[in-house]
Length: 275
Image (cartoon, rainbow, N blue to C red):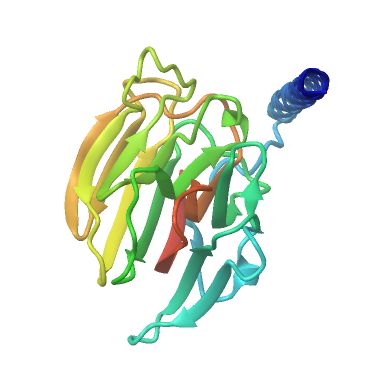
């Protein structure tokens, strides 16, 4: 009976793996079709000359304190809340709780994130994006060797390249700002393009700000970054854009499901695009 049961479990596991692979293949087909559709749409709009206004000045998202200002909330119920700090600034509280709620089955990670984007405008070659916010680690914030992301930037067409083009990350007690090329290649970037490394500081607000010139040309794209009022990255060149795409920025906590329950606080959230 034990042998029979083992064989039955093996067959069931084989079917489950095959089914998962089939679903993954179907999703990849859908993703590739969506990417091709967007590329075709971009080309049609370009040919028609109606892609978007030739120029805008200072497109700005300046968070005023309402969750409805964001395009999307990601996480378990109650994972994202708001408050006001001692100085009267609207504050975003992102908390990842223990348990299954909020777990992404495709990655085994959990998130408490907000997202906002440039829709319906497209990001173009040469645009300069500025992202800024203050972040506070609570006094009792626990650390773990399991990696986490505390803010990340994406473009619509980077979904298959292995990760966000820019991200503030957390590894144990270390923090880092990481950049990936538009077409991610681990052979070219074995360390994931780390631009800055610092330490977790609990219990006080830390300002974050970066400028990023978007380009498909390694000699034209660049990033400059400031942390806690100090410039930590000076004109780091590299390609950071694939094709004209929809820029979206995520802010909050994205971590492994085995990481402890944690929360982060954000304020003074701002996105600006200059063309």
